[in-house]
Length: 259
Image 1: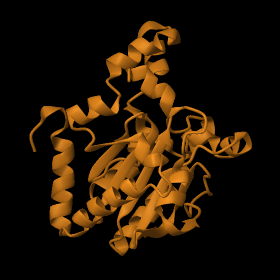
Image 2: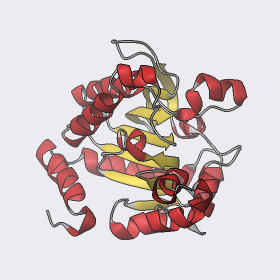
Image 3: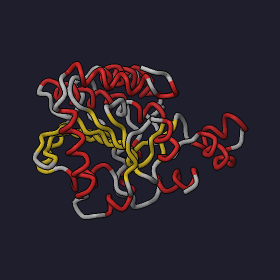
């Protein structure tokens, strides 16, 4: 699959959203709302449940299922209160050392005036800062679009996985083409240059696992559920020091820098 084909697949109509994954992977999910500062952002779904009997905190960026729902959820472009809601649940998970599962699917954080007035950049930076030292296992899965800081705010994790037909990039191909060549029609060319596919990012060490889309199509997603349970169980067995040291080393080695 070529780079831009992955981008188009990640945006395809009818693609499973975060709530679809939660319905298949998580038993007894209870959604929790609000950031305790401003309000509740429907673009971010956060709550508690059980993954194969393991208590987990789940945080997902939700694009919506139909047009009214997509509008209500701002097409998965979260506001600061969405990221602060996520951080509140992460800190609660840390208190009980409950593993955190993040499901990433966004073209990017919302860049409206209100979002900027309420500290969009700071909210994203705080999440990245806090995730790096969060004393509980964190695993993030890019299930569709992984756009810029909006994705990174939920992807500073012990492991980052990606669907084979997803993308993860500092900027969208259209945005890159518009900046570099003043021509969004060169998006395909930009996509190849950005090296945003799961295969590219696995080779670079940015992600640890490529998820086969066929595993997602199975009812209950048994293969993915088993893999997630194994990984989170493995990280749960580590001490706080081992967990944080490994997370730090993961990001230090990206780009060829040794830990």
